[in-house]
Image 1 (tube, rainbow, N blue to C red):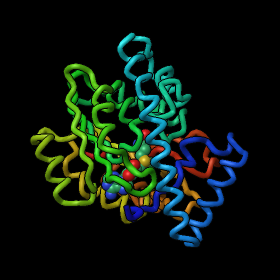
Image 2 (cartoon, rainbow, N blue to C red):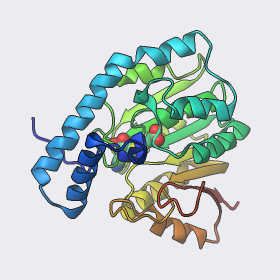
Image 3 (cartoon, rainbow, N blue to C red):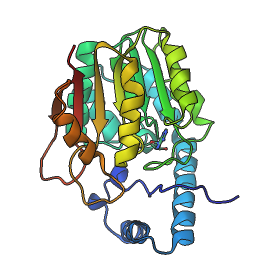
Image 4 (cartoon, rainbow, N blue to C red):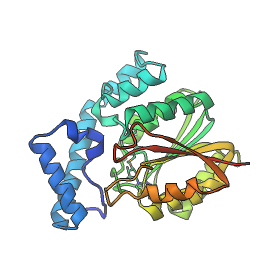
Length: 282
Ligand SMILES: C[S@@+](CC[C@H](N)C(=O)[O-])C[C@H]1O[C@@H](n2cnc3c(N)ncnc32)[C@H](O)[C@@H]1O
């Protein structure tokens, strides 16, 4: 099987490598720096592809824990506690979000306060943010989550995970999983058809982190935003990671008078992450 055309990097941010030094951590960093320098392309692709498959095998073996926890009702309703549980990997490392817990908790409080009835997430990956979006949206929310198999910055998910993600939803919620390129016109049309003219109350953009990619997601889906809706963008802080350039677009939004913006940042010096919220002015 040819290695996919992807800039997927081992989920370094997700596993908190800084806290887990040692041989595996060092190996991941080495692969990452080769990738960023454009060196040993075949080798880095092979390594990241294998890494992704290993994660999938681990998830396949541990996936029952999420279902068990949801069935026995032990999962907390409180936003902070829920975010903690997911980020600490107590539901299994397989759904740990690729986010800073403090920032994710603030974002989920915003979601919980709004209880959106229509939600679009671009960037499903291992389902960490999707899980929380399902928890804190309206009990009858329509939720759409888009991810491109082997996409940048995470690598998407295999088809067998769809049934697993469906267990995240409440009985009256509707989950639409689109394994597709968010930048394709067909995907935009599909999302539009699913939403059915009501508009989307909450959009989360956390997929292609290039300047062009994030801007395209924003421009394509902004027209589908419902009046009073909000768009969240992940990774708005400046970073020295050359594959992440969301900050350049974020600065443009901060200077755009047709919107109001707010940032959720745990520590301005952290050098990555940061969530930006955009509220179009009526
Ligand atoms: C950083 S991960 C998302 C993390 C997730 N929101 C979380 O924290 O749990 C980014 C995901 O976006 C997907 N992606 C990248 N480019 C995409 C595109 N053009 N269309 C759809 N998905 C894309 C990748 O496959 C990857 O799984």
